[in-house]
Image (cartoon, rainbow, N blue to C red; front, side, top):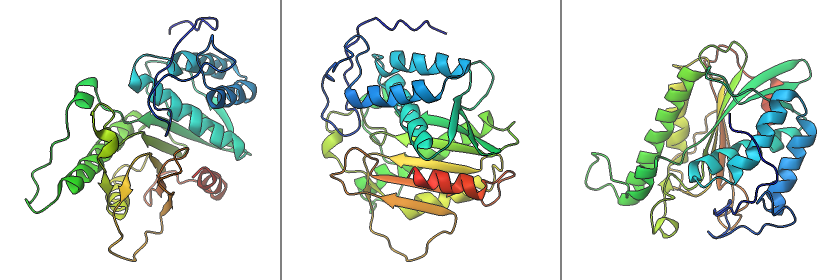
Length: 281
């Protein structure tokens, strides 16, 4: 594990959840290279997560938030955002030690009950970020926007399968949190002008079907920062899905966030866990 050097100066360049790409002002903590909002969130974690393993990982978050690699920064942002949201709803969060073993990122306690959270950001490889998306072998009448949405769904399913293998040894409830900052399109020149139309009910349905085959995952929390939901074609609502859709202009929060519970989970979320996670939506 690399050492954390708190006095080193960094210059972070990122979109930072809805802002225009460009340098982030150093604010009052120029030596850390964090914006005011990020520093406040980081300071909250530093105060509340005081155990040894959390202290090391929270300290390393600064290095990751100011890293030159986009994927490292987005992964750190996803952890920072979810951890602070859980703290605000009364959940005690402990960052688990980083190791070669297959472990989750957080251990969360609410009263005498606990659950684990694994956080992942889908940004794609550097090569994928430089290439335009190609359609799958779909019917010719399907539009390009729909192709891009279908590809995104397939990538989400692939990530769930991958993480389910990593978390297969847990006996307590496990939540997989997936953040898609710009629908895996950060590397494209015109990504900001090209809409990604996504069928949210189709996504919820196929994820539910997949979860029934991986009982070790209790739920999946999906944050989509830059999609355009397709108009709903049916009034049917899955009982295991909680969906929040925000206006496009509200750039400080994900455009869509959904909690999909596993109806076949070996360790389902308790009512208190479920209520707390729903508050983070």
